[in-house]
Length: 462
Image (cartoon, rainbow, N blue to C red):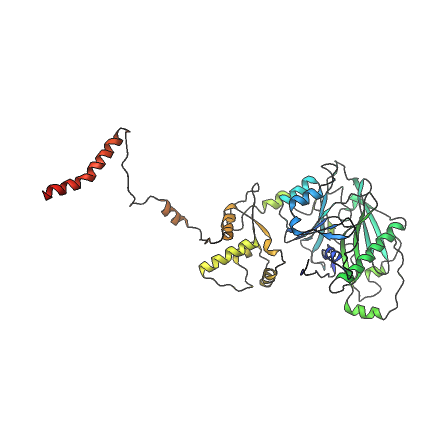
């Protein structure tokens, strides 16, 4: 997309989101990277922002934002499901680890798998608490789920495969236990060697092509020196790139030192028996090591249950009323800012451009002034369209700001509302009619009373 800022990749252990953006970016020939990537939806500010997929020509493409809706996501991701127990998608995100003060900033990668019912609940009912990606599940070759990890460097490429012990369509084991590989417990899967040279050579070739494409397509010409990539082979022996779990980049000073050294031959990829010195940085103390075992987990035990997460969010942040989960109401950050601007004009309050309004600070307490001003001024940012669950009364108050020419007034107090609803003493009191036959008598009496003043005036004048 023209004018869109390209993300910058940094050294990271965990889910590397910018990998998809850089593979989709065009190189100097105007072509994206030719690699098989399942449908991947990147979430930004808890809403789907980008949808990457592999086209019919084998190139990585991206869908228009108007097509990124939950109905189309559910239809495309569940297409080809063999039964209701079949796995259709997985969600990858980073979750904070409580009480962890390590160098990894207390983060671990959480992978959660969905069947048809789970995906429907995730798209239409659950509140997205973490960003990440929703990826279409690639059906493995065989009855058991598996994943291949490739630890790549310019000197060598090490492969390792982990296979789950439970069949995918087994009804005895829970969904997370029959799909977990590296993110699950040790007793749920086993490590198997990658035999032969055909698969190893193809994986090494794919890693080299991705590294070369990122170096030519990135704005800063970033070069990767080490990375940990996750692949999967499908029923047709195709190799799919799933996601990157660790990456290290070449720094500027390292480029100057490497230019004076002669090029070293690249050995063939190996599945076992190779040294990890070139990957871990043990040969050079100045190089940061790549993480060969990033922290990953399954949400079966670590994350709270769905009932507990919903019970913590059953109160409207604006009115304090309990929320109705059967009929949810949403407002965006833009609706909150528009409402706050109108109320500030009415109350004659002036705020600095980097001052967060109180209503927005109530739902986003970690937002500072600098980040608020930057996201508000960026026209391509999705920050303004982040949705917040609220009550019906708050939804109606915020929706009034979208109507042109409507002036928003503050809510009436209880005393003022009672005074308006109470009957006034100056209001006329009509006589009560006890019997229907008295209606004609009252009407004739009223007409005679209207004529009496005129008759009295005539008598006085005579």
